[in-house]
Length: 263
Ligand SMILES: C[S@@+](CC[C@H](N)C(=O)[O-])C[C@H]1O[C@@H](n2cnc3c(N)ncnc32)[C@H](O)[C@@H]1O
Image (cartoon, rainbow, N blue to C red; front, top):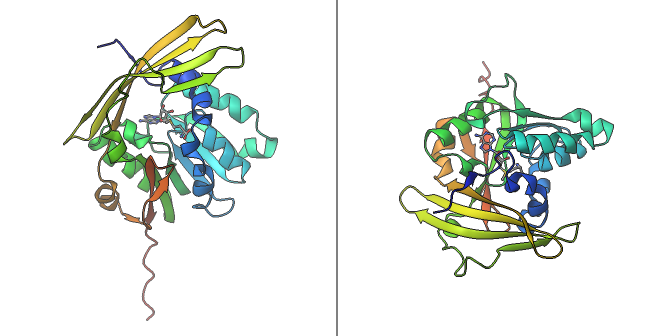
């Protein structure tokens, strides 16, 4: 077994190259428009696991007031730089804060809570999932929605590449070098629905020499979300929406308070 860093750790290549790798992932096309369509025009949005601010910035630029929360300083640092590059009016509508989505209380509510791009799958499928749904419910205005993008269980079960020496991603870098990603280990555990992967990031210079390499451990968990959501007062709001064929966005709604019957 290789000694691996946790994903998005300080000095990790997964954090440093997050935007480059994500920009190359066509399976995310459409997530921004999907989330924007779940909030009222100009409505407020809380993003759980905001990372480098990809969606926090984009949704603020669309006119929403967005708070993004993330646990990783390495990701937030890049996110703050992205927000600083927004047009002034959008910049005023966006903020990023450090926090743990499993134990967050901002003492306010939002029209929409989003937990995009498999972020919920990064935390263990028991109490951490329940606490994240409780966070979503606590921060939702009555009638507001919460959207969770979860990986497909069927794809989590797939074995790793037959040849681990062949990159699963090979991207050109601006300096003429390349970034290559290799899956070194991949194991899915049935019953607990847990996928463990070691992804190695390798940076090469223009001559093909290795400049840096960083093996990183990524674990994904999956649990049926609907019972957990219902336990905190969130009802499923339509069928889960397929995103890029690798996962689904599950949308829930917090009930409006009952209107008292007319006398
Ligand atoms: C796949 S990235 C998604 C980033 C961003 N939402 C996007 O769509 O580009 C997952 C993010 O979740 C964050 N994360 C993982 N566990 C977290 C937790 N318990 N609380 C807050 N953020 C967390 C990671 O630091 C990482 O930035």
